[in-house]
Length: 323
Ligand code: CP
Ligand code: NVA
Image (cartoon, rainbow, N blue to C red; front, side):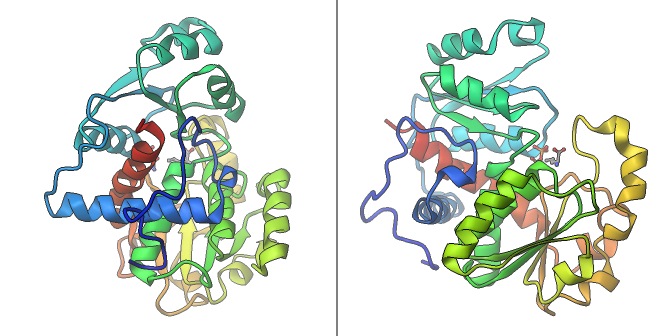
C-alpha cells in the first residue's frame, strides 16, 4: 500500500446518496480512500480476479459532447464490475429536443442506479443532481473534470510513490475544467501547485480563493502566474491541456496567438526537476500545447494516465453505486 489506507480492512467512508461533481466536495481522507480502492481494483483486474461489486446495476451515461476515454472507460468499468452501462447521446434523447433537466433526471432515476453526465455548464449538472434520486457523476463540464484528475492522482502516486510534498505545475489555459480540478485535487492531497496562464485565461477566482484558504491552513504553496518559467521551476509533475476546449472552437485562432509562449517543450522543461513526469488528459495537439518530443518522450506517462481513468472510475462507481 502506498501512502493510502487499506480499503478492504474496514469501510471508513460512506458515499451512499452522494454525487461526484467536484473534488472540493470531498475530504483529503475520502480522496485518498478512493485512490486506495482504485489501487486494489486495478490489482484485481490485472490478476484476473473477478470483482462483480455492481452485479445487476446499470449506469446511464449522458453525453452532450464527444468522448473517447470517458465513454469507453466508464462502459468497460461497469462491465468489469458486473453491471452494465447505457450510452445516451443528447442528440438522441428528448433532452436534446428541450425536455427539461428536472424531468429527465426524475425519469432516468426510475431506471438506472447512477448517471454519468458530460455537459457544458456546471449549473446543468448541479440541476441534474438536485432532481435525481441516484448518484450523479461528473464526466466533464466547462468548469470541472474531476474523474480525470482522480486518475491523474493515481498515476502520480504510481510513478512517484507519494502525493504530499510534490510540486505540480500546470501550463496553459487556466480557465478550463482541467486546471480547476487539478487545483482542487492537488491542494487536497498536499501537493504544491503552480498555474501559468496568459492574462485573460486565468483560473476561476472562486476556485482560487477556496484553494488558497486550504493552502494557508496546510502550508501548501499555490502560485498563479503569467510566467511559465516561474511556474515550472523544480516541478515534479508537469501538466497541460488543449488551448481550445470543446465548445470554444470559434476562438481557436485567438487562442493560438494568446498561448504561443505557453507551450510545454524541452526548453521549458529544463527548469523542472530532472525526473519530472508529464501528464495530459488527452486528446492532445502535438506542436501546440506540447511538443511531440515531450508527449512521446521518456518523461511522459499519458497512456498510464489514460488507462487509470478505468481504475479510478471503477473506484467511484463501486463506492457511489453499491447499496
Ligand atoms: N480525457 C478525456 O476526458 O478524454 P475524452 O474526451 O476522450 O473522454
Ligand atoms: N479541456 C478539454 C478537456 C478534454 C478532455 C475540453 O474540455 O475539451
